[in-house]
Amino acid sequence: MFNFFKLVQNENMKIYRRPRTYVMLGLLLALIAAISIIGYFVDQNHTTSAWSMIMTEVMISYMLITVFAIIIASSGVADEFTSGTIKLLLIRPWSRSKVLLSKYIAVLLYALGMVVVMLIFTVIINMIVFGFADETAAEVISPLVSGSIVAYLLKYSLLKYVSLVVTTTLAFMLATVSRSGALAIGLSLFLILGVNSFTVLLASIKYKWADYILFIHLDLTQYLNDTPMRDGMTMGFSVLVLAIYYAVFVALAWYVFKKRDVAA
Amino acid sequence: MEQPIVQLQQVTKRIGKKTIINNLTLDLPLGEVFGFLGPNGSGKTTTIRMMVGLMAMTSGEIKIGGFSIRSEYQKAIRNVGAIVENPEMYKYLTGYQNLVHFARMIEGVTPERIQEVITLVGLEARIHDKVKTYSLGMRQRLGVAQAILHRPKLLILDEPTNGLDPAGIRELRDYLRQLSKEEGIAVFVSSHLLSEMELMCDRVAIIQNGKLIDVRTINQGGMDVESNVHTLFEVDKPAEAAEVAAELGKAAIREGSSLVIEANREFVADFNARLVASGIKVYGIRVQTKSLEDQFLEVTGGERIV
Image (cartoon, rainbow over the protein chains, first blue to last red):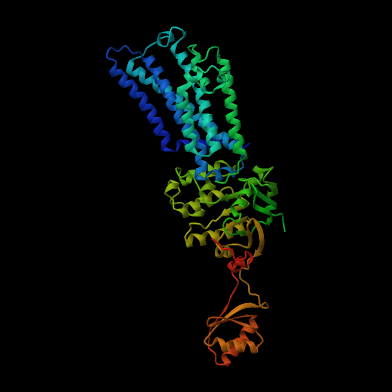
């Protein structure tokens, strides 16, 4: 098989040769820096620790990265259809599945890259603003958790990345099926930001079927502090539900992309 | 004849109850510029989309280089370079980045080859500019460049002269003829521009409502001495001239101050001598070759083009 990596390289080129990618990154970093600096001046007594600031900013940043990843994932597929370049892309000696896979990998890499840059930047800027501190997770988060705060942050980020991947895959699937970037971005954002704010409500539904709603499982960090949204829910069950949704999204995206006549 | 590069066998495409392409069978040999002519909505682009695998056939088979586009897609498409409809490229990338993009997708395209193709289509000066700053003609050139990057055996161009200026059209035409003759590749061109096809193609297939109506070979010059052709005589007294024609046993059709008769070369000369002898002034004699347009209108039953 001739170098599949080159396909991913192409998709990367299409992401990183666009100014908007850097605008998004700039927005994210500026927001983090702004929170830290404003926090520093507001907090007259300097009681805020660097790590509690880091945890807050990471949580906010994940929200923003999710939005950006949805935009990149949706437009990555849909733009090919709206601009008509999909026709030139598909008439090459590559199967449609692999073309789509290269796009998907590029999007996941983008999300990963954003997370890594965000983490490093957040830690560094807060160490500069608030000074280096060595704290335990119990001090920063809650007495219920143990271990070092760095280990906690890494676990937290990993679990958040899982939900980022599922969300991005949802957007990717919507874009592939609808071929419209606006629709995919709008719908994904509505589901993630809109419906997600009602998760507590959803979680309180008394019926059995509510156990299988995607949104109450999306945030796996609920298990880090041992505060699941529904009683009796376990991490294993949530991962299983997420895995099933994920498989459905992927199957749908690939099936539609492979079968559809390209008439755009 | 060697094995045709493209074989369309009873290709049919139905969308819902509507039959878009009906039982189309066509063979294309190497080294020929083949025109695909039809009114808008006749199924030209649909056929091209099926040839490059963008659309699935309802029934039938398309083989390119002997490989089925259905079951051996990657081997089949390796032989094809194409522009389907407009040459849409990534506007936010430069022309060069676009070419690199497509070069990466096919084995064996070197940076030297990219450079060679750029020179060939005459984009050296602007290749490092973003495509969104290109004119339609320049995009068309870039489209041709990406299509020939990997030296395909079959070049499929959908309406290639769209947006080109007359010099560009001429250049493209010469280049396509050169490609087909020197490199022996098959060029498949769709168009509704009849005059263009006449100058560019060796053979033309005419399609209407998804059906193949006719395949015609286009005469590239060469006079047929024996056969009767429509010849137009511009004279000062057409009524008297018609009588002269009648004396010689030929029916003449009056067209304003001109006469049209169907005759061979010898008769034309004789008739002219008789006209002059009878004191009728002859201002001009013209052979009315049936243009592709006439033929086209003839076979499609006068359906409006464009």
